[in-house]
Image (cartoon, rainbow over all chains, first blue to last red; front, side, top):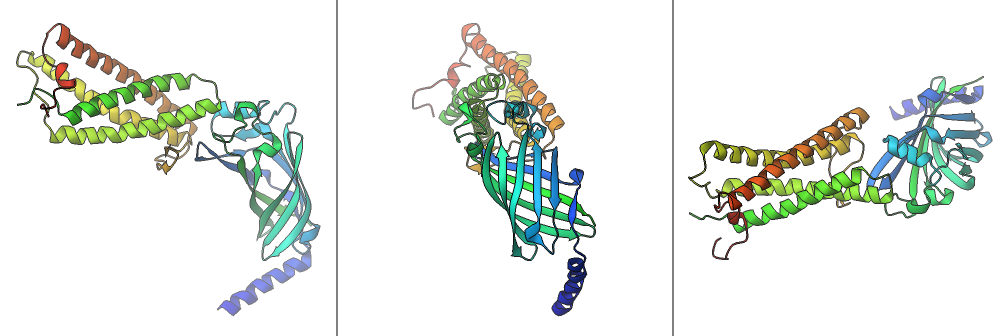
Amino acid sequence: MQRFTLALSLAAALPLAAQAVEYSQIQADKSAINFAYKQMGVSMDGKFSKFAAQLNFDPAKPTAAKATLDVQLASIDTGSSEADDEVAGKQWFNTKAFPTAHFASSSVKALGGNRYEVAGKLTIKGRTQDVVAPVSFTAQGNQGVFAGSFAIKRADFAIGEGAWAAFDTVANEIQIKFHILANAGK
Amino acid sequence: MSTHYTATAKSLHWLMAILFFGLLGLGFYMSGLPLSPEKLKLYSWHKWAGVSAFLLVWLRLLWRVTHRPPALPESMPKLLQLAAHAGHLALYGLMIVIPLSGWLMSSAKGFQTVWFGILPIPDLLAKDKELGNLLLTVHQSLNLLFIAVIAGHVGAALKHHFIDKDDILARMLPAPATEN
C-alpha cells in the first residue's frame, strides 16, 4: 500500500515538475495575514485585511522564487476599534508617515519535501530588518497555498514607543502568520 | 440562639464589601481612561479581582446554606422582613451574575481572562464584537442595579441602627471572641 501511494505521488509530481508551473497570481481575498502576541500574559491575535503581494514561484526552481509583500498597516484589526486607532498613531505604526510594511525576499532555500526557507528584508516604520520564515507550499489543483510564520521583535521597528516601550503589558515578540493563496500562471 | 453572625460569615461579608467597592470604583475609573499600558494593567487587575470575588461568593453561599443566620427581630413588620430577604437574594444573585457577565464580555471581546496572569479561564464565547458590546451594556447595567441595591442595603442597616435602634447592624460587626 505504501509503495503504491509513493508511486502515485511520484506519478503526480513528475508531470507537475516537467510543466514548470509558476504560481504568481495572488488571490488576496483567500489569503490572510494574522499576528499574535501576548498582552498582560494573555495570548491575543489580530489580522491585516489589506495587502498586496507579488510572487513568482516554480516548484521546479524554488531557489529562483521571488516574493514581495506590502501590507496596509491601517487595515489592522486588533479586535477593538480603540486599539485599532491607537496603533495607527505615532507611537505605534505612525501610518500617516509609514502607511505600509514592506517585505522583499532575497533568497529561497529548499528544505526538502514541501518546505522552504525564505529570507528577506522587512521594512516597517522606516526600519529594515532581516527576517527568515519557514514556508510550506501545498499545491491544490491549479492553486498553491504558501503558509508559514515568523517572529519579529516590535522594538526593532520602534512599534510601540514612549509609554508602550516597556514589555510588561505588550510583549516584544510578535508572531506573524501568513497564508497566501496563488493561482498558477502559464 | 446566637444573635450574631459567625466569625466566618462576618469576615466574608466585610472582605467582599471591600472587594466589591474596589471593583466598582476601579471599573468606572478604568473604563473612562484613554488606552495606555496603565489601562491594560488596570483591566487585568479588575478581571483578576472579579474572578476572585466570583469564587468567594460561592464559598460564602456554601457557608450561608450550612450556617443559619440569626433571625430577624420579631418587631419587624412581615413586609419589611420579606423585603430584607429579597434584598439579600438580589445581592447574592448580582454578586454571581456580575462577574459572570464580565467574564462573558471578555470572551466575546477576544480578551481571555488569565487569573493573576497564570491560570487561563476558558472562553465561554467566541470572539464577536457586537455581542461583546451588548455584554458591556449588560455588565454596566447590572452594576448600576448593584449600586442601587447596595445603597438600599446600607441604608436599611443604618435605619435599623439609628432609627429602630435594634441589633441588626451590630450582629454583623466584630463581636467578643465567645460569640462564635
